[in-house]
Structures are given as C-alpha cells and as structure tokens.
Length: 431
Image 1 (cartoon, rainbow, N blue to C red):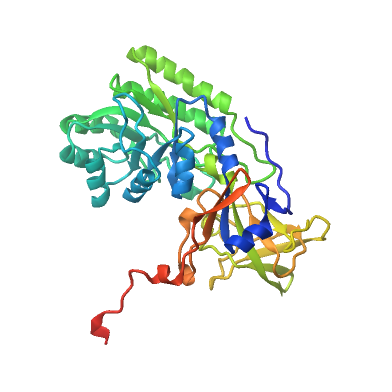
Image 2 (cartoon, rainbow, N blue to C red):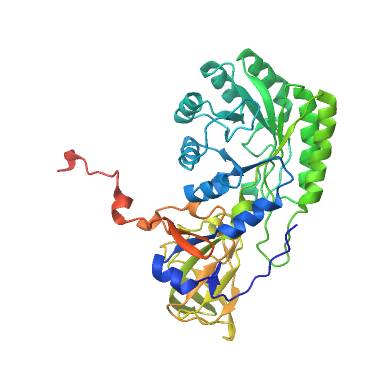
C-alpha cells in the first residue's frame, strides 16, 4: 500500500521540471501529468489479473497509450471513448477467444452512434439497463455481455458521485436480475460477466459490501459467468488526514469471493478491477498564473487565469484540492508569510471559486504570500479535470503536458479561437 502523501503549500517543480519553465514553454493554465506517478499506481494493483482503466477520468490519447503499454485495459462510456481507445492503440476485440476484452463499453443506454459502433467493431458491452439488452439482442444476436447491477446501495464523496441505490440511474436494479436474464436468452445473448460499482471514494467497509452482493448475484446468474468485476471507486487522498484503501486486504476479500464462486461453478473466473481516479488523480496538476490580488472586506482573493471551465470539481461537488504557490522566479516560497486566502478564477460567475465547500460556501486556504505573476498549482487534479472542461465565457481548453523521465512534452495543444468557433456558422438568411 502506498504511503500517505504529504502536501506542502509551496513548490518549485513538478516531476523534476521547474514550474516557471513549464509555464514559459506551454503557457497557463496548463494540465501537467507525471507519467511516473501513473506507473506507481498501476503497480499497486498487480494482484488483479485484469486492471481496466475507466478512461472517463482522463481520456487524453497519450495517457491511454501510456496505460496500454503497461498492460492496462480500458473501459469506454461513449462512442467517442471507444474511438479514443482505438486511436491510442487498443484493439476492439481480443486476439484469441478467452482473452480479456481490450475495450468494454459500459453505459446505461445505447445512443444510435454507440450501438452502431459496438456492432461494427464487435465491442463487448457492459449493459446497465434492460433496454440495452433488448436492443443489442436485436442488433447483434450471439454476442456475449456483462451485466452492470445496481445492488440497492451506494457510496460517494458527494451524492452526485454515488452510483448505487434507488436514487442512482446507474445499473440494472438487483431485483430485476431474473427478468434481464430472460431478456438475454430471448435475444440470443450470453451473460459472461457481472459488474458492480457503487460510487467513488469508497472505504474498505463499503467495498467489502460489494463483494457480498456480487457473490449473491453471481450465484443467481450461474455458470455462464467467466468474469467478475469489482468496479472502481478506490479513493486517493486529497487531504493530509486521508489515506488509501489497503489493496492487499481488498484483493483478499475479492479473491475469497471469487474462489467460492469458482468452486460452485466448477471453472475459473477472471477478477477485474476498474480504477479511474486511482490511476491518474495524483499524477495531474493544473498550473495557473496569479493575475490579481484583491482585498474584499476581510477576504484576500488570489485571482488566477484558470476557472471552473478548466477544473469543475470544486463548483460541482465542493471538492477539495491541495494547492501550492510557486514564485515566478522559481525560488521557494517557503519563507514567505502565510495568509488565509480565497482562490478565484476569471469567469463572469460568482461560483468561480476553487476554495469552496459543497453547497457553494466560500472558504479560505492557508497559502504563502504571493505576487502578481507567481503560479498557483492545483494538485491531485489528474482525474475529472481536463475531461470535464468547457468553453464557458469562450475560454479555450487548456494545454496538456506529460512529463516522463524528466522530459515534458505537449500532448494537447491549447485550443485556439479558430478551434473554438469551428463548426459555427451564420445562416445565409441573416444577410
């Protein structure tokens, strides 16, 4: 199990490359990813036969390629994510029968594009609704499928990230399992996999509950199963007092359930894990420049050139991210006096605050005194950061940079104004 990280309010580099140098080369705001940190987290999970990355957490094709080359398979939740995986070098289907599927499409619906692509490329599907089973049976009878089951309970660091229970849209309700098995038979589909995922940020107690539910539901599905998936939800620490789940204990819980099912079915089962945040969150930092320092009554604001168009987690969930200050000249800010400050962005929106709690309540952060031109580094931002970006206020998408072996390379160019309006048109009738 990795040691709990320590967070500092000041820094000078990311993965050995000076922050001012990164800002000079790539501009701000920019997402910077540490390839070495991703490799560390992949290495944590080697006990699981199959690690399948939930690419919705960070879907840049360079990140997908990096993960693919380390033996990690991929989960896709849209036609676009299937195409991203293939662009990063993933094959749409196994080289030989019985191998794990390189790409699995997991969703609660088929839109028309995704259904057509799944059928065309013979992509394995993890079906999250009864209607998906009917639609796939009609379009591609003879396919093998996985069922994503909502076990009736869930967990998450926010209600918005809870993917189980009766208030969640995700998965097939556990009491409908017999019905969907009948639908699969009717459509000529074989149920070979079972998948449960109850939400993000779960602890060992909640994760162990999933094991029990999986075992019970798997016995109801029966011997057609060849794969069980523990889903994702492994937490990473965003605060000093938070820690990691004990992976050894977690694996043991799942392996014991798997062995009991193998004994009941009389054949081996593959155990999959589907991490997203766990693999990439700690690798990513959002680097922004401080462009204004404002006194608003009792509050001091550092206003930076990144906003919730770049990192939406604080405004969506009140999510906490560790932050640090880097001096513009690259010197350490450690000796500067510390202040309680509010961090805001440039958007024309009162909610454009990075230091806020769920419900929109503004809070402060203890950070070193800063000057205009210094850099704010928002840390543990590699998951659900760039992928949730928007063009609100006609702001361009930030650049993305990958650091590997001390070398920083651009993996996504900053969006230009021409990129921003591409596809828009003024109708001839307006002339």
